[in-house]
Image (cartoon, rainbow, N blue to C red; front, side, top):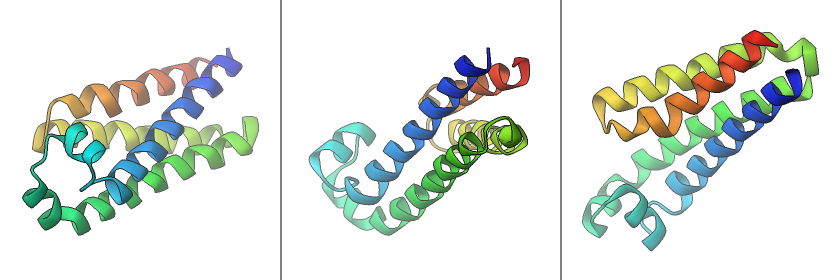
Length: 118
């Protein structure tokens, strides 16, 4: 079970590193505009805010990788960062777009359940 849990944690980490790339580097590019449904004007005006948000997503991904590198000794770190992912997903769904709950919160919750069960 711990292998399955670690794979789920790694997928959530990769997802957050992808969010980092989207928000920090592709926000005002065609892929970012399509992904987030932005106009070029809004993307230009909010680019620095998106980069900040991307950095935080990168920290979540880095924390999960840290937990994975520590192996079984990293379970508390995985639990902490997965809880942060879930809270961020819930907050994003409430304040920005309900899709965030499914794209961020659900994968974090599944990974957290697997870590707790392993």
